[in-house]
Length: 549
Image 1: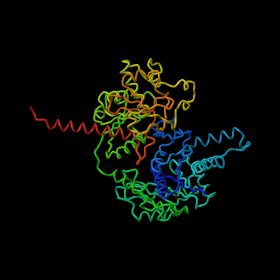
Image 2: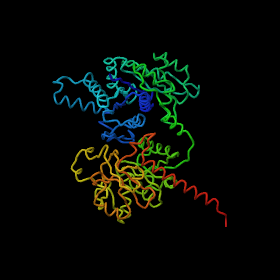
Image 3: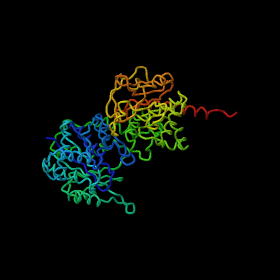
Image 4: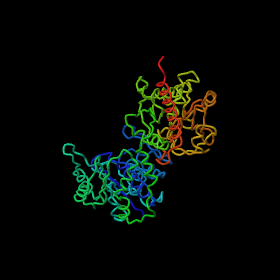
């Protein structure tokens, strides 16, 4: 019988449910339990693929091409398992499915209602996770905050699941926030009490309360929360904010949450948790390391969550190289207007991440030109590869009109373009290349040195491709295509041959980076940036040591 852990949030949004769910998955996996994690998103969009990054943040892509919530990135990075599309459900998917069934006559003309039709569809999709993954425990995170009207169908479905499966197979975890009143120097539990009361009013009674706070939570507060929320005191788990994201499982382990979950679910650990490698990783994160400055030139810089996986992949690689990445977030539009150049020039490496639309593209092209001319290590991710190719083509062809048809449909030199097979597809998502695709690596290239393998598989999310009509002329002027699709028809990785490290990938390597297994392209990039930092330091030292004339 599959066990379920349901994670809800209260008091405020962005309380940390996603990281908590991921950390719970890590606790159970360390005990030999096979887990999977699912996110229930209340918005009516079918998926986040067409949503504005300023509203939703990063779109995280899975192996099967599913465009999902960024929390699935946390799940994969913590439990180190590749998830599938069944692990992200939206209200839009639920209603689309039920309405489609109604149109086909599945319900024999009956009146369609939230209960039982919508809730039954929610439960059916939750049940698909263990069916497809074989998970013994499925952790289900409900998006939003308790009290939001759009979450009610999901919460009702979870209430029914406890009734149907029993208490030994279901467990409710509620994540709340303890506000700090500076005037009195107190943490307040009243908002948590109200949040739990709201949960109980709809039939959900939490078994575990995760009390988030920026300050230490004493035993007296744990006892108070337990008393007024009717939860065992050992089920009240304080979780103080930490600058190291990956420390969260260790903080929960320190309060014996893993053992408590097994006890409540009537499960036995298959092995004793071994945190040695994870603790060493977190300890290394807290040590002082040489800094390397990385400029991220993007379109959605105001919301760093839009580049969550990029940021984490850089951090993973930096830790592996015993370095500390210091980010400069530079808006590409600012570069077009003459701002942000001091930060760019001070960087030891430049990353241009993915994105869509023509806003800020010339700023990205300018960043690629600067990196090429000044021999600054450059890593282009999807769009970042495309602007690198455009910039190179403009230099090679001596024609500023070289462009992508995404940004200039009438460009005479469409070095980036839709494939012929894509041009007749009407739906916006239909032209996308999504999910895991193989890539053959050419020997003797920077990519080959980084990967150490001849064939890799990487996740894609893009619509436009490098135009093969320009491959020969670009190769004849210093561009090297080091990664190709197995049939040789699609360029997956491009490099500048006469450059220490200037590489762009059509795929998104950041989606496959893990804290203890950083992605090899990011590691190679960080090492190249470190070499530039060292060269800059030596140059500065030599200049300071010169005697005045």
